[in-house]
Image (cartoon, rainbow over all chains, first blue to last red; front, top):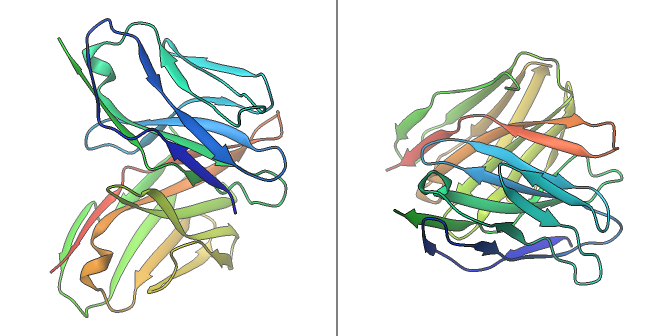
Length: 114
Length: 115
């Protein structure tokens, strides 16, 4: 079945550091890929997405590129802020008759210190 | 904002008691979902609905049932709560986008503790 694997956390960075959170997936067909962010005490918010190979999703300074050859969708940000401290989830939708269901990775906790 | 509310937001209940969580949406979305969130597991799908009275199981459906008698409400019931069902429960809806992909939007969550 479909699966998503994220790098183990937690990740702790200083403000203005470069961020990478790795995400790899296993899926049949051509999935859509997503990153969601969860701030403390809140629900998940869609951060960015990519729907086909070589697409780059971007939002709020975060970027991720859909790499079909390596089945990856790594999240990057050039300069993190304290306000980026949150839990980040990689997810995929298999498309087709999947009724929009998402398969999530286990989440990566990011803490950014001043 | 996809207009999703969940009730209650917090609940403490005893083992063996029935519990019903409610998800309400205001924008007539067809697809709705219930997930649970546990440390180390991310979010796991419990049940989903693709229309009124049309529901199906997700990967962790044992011990849970759902009902959808009208478009705006999707109910999750724990028939006899157990401590392993202590979790945070999220409801979500899907929007079908122009690029032929789905985007999911989530409610604020319900924190359930079973003692």
